[in-house]
Length: 540
Ligand SMILES: NC(=O)c1ccc[n+]([C@@H]2O[C@H](COP(=O)([O-])OP(=O)(O)OC[C@H]3O[C@@H](n4cnc5c(N)ncnc54)[C@H](O)[C@@H]3O)[C@@H](O)[C@H]2O)c1
Image (cartoon, rainbow, N blue to C red; front, side):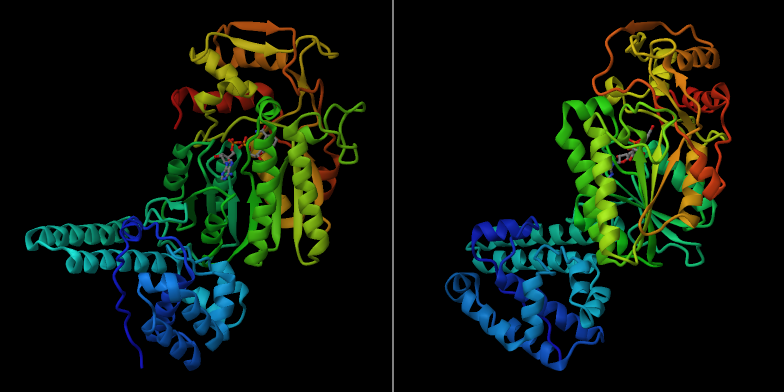
């Protein structure tokens, strides 16, 4: 026997308003009510729940108090429900089904056994929709019972009816938004990626410069990708381009959301075929900005890595490829830098990445079946040689910008001149020396690392060319590629947090993975980037 819930009206005006806006706060009573309705729903849907659990759920649903009563007796009733059903108690304690529809599948899964079936059965979306409809119905019932004048009552009924209709239509049509702060690109909510893929990879930061190139390559290699990006940096246009470039493959799913939010990660991981690997690109990544706002870096880089690992743990995802940086090394005395060089970062960006590496190593130490590879990239530039993707630094970040973006901006007249910061370094021409690695080479290194190099303890590789290029040399190449007499202004004082000279020893990655940079001609590589940027003066 099953029954349908007939929710009692929200008489309290504030509650009524909150419910209408989907903001009803969680209360133990509300949880019971939703839990009860869910269990009944599941039984209707022939999902396996024990008869005892369902009966208790039904009793709880039937005996629920009005909101006025709840204030006085609610707790007592809640306790009664809890005592009569261990499942109800366990579920409530783990509060995996908070009101507002934020059912976190992971928490349900953590109950184990039947919890997993529950998690499978109740997709977040179903609960959201049910709750909203229920809330709207409550408003509808409340308005019809509490209004005194019949004409205003009819108006309210009509209005509520349209609000309800609107909610259902928005959900049915778009499936874009939910209250768990994750937003899917059009149609991606419903999307199941193709089954016949090599691997389903979660790419964080896939709207960014490196992440977008990585995504394209992964899909071309026969993998499926779920991107999570909050678009705080990167470009939405890159996502559109990726959609277009991979059209028909059913291999790209995009979630706009912050990886600091576990609801977003839960939604990303709760998909089929199961995600088995994660490439973690998402990060804020500017040395200068990290000097001004270090906390941003520790939260976004270090803490988010821990959050991501927790989510991977919940969903039993055991492989990670991590984007680290040569900034972890600081200003070493001996060059070229090998993986054995002691890292002594001199800015919060480098430190936050080194700490994130440590978070990964400690996690690996505690979880024998977890495998990771950490790639410390040097300075990444260039773009897809076929001109399909590029790098478009966001205008508001120009002050912190990277050298190639700044060169092109100067060549395009977006900025008046190119500022070289630091001409007094102890280097061959006084400017910084960097190891510039083409993004295509870098992504090739990721594919190899993903296929061959994840291990426990995590393996570590430098990714560079092994050759240092000074900023002045880079600017010279940029002038010749763009054919624009870029105006250059030199500033003696170095940018805070900058190190003088870094370039990689890449013997290890060459020896162990057979990887070597292919694009070592600076002008050719800059030419790829310029070709794209010229065609996309205002970005994607
Ligand atoms: N570009 C380089 O020269 C370089 C060098 C060494 C290491 N790296 C590392 O490579 C990675 C990618 O760098 P990039 O140059 O592509 O940078 P990018 O800014 O172009 O891309 C980073 C992406 O991550 C996203 N992001 C940031 N915080 C997020 C969050 N909390 N939740 C979801 N998405 C978030 C941004 O919106 C952006 O799309 C970074 O981890 C960076 O530290 C880059």
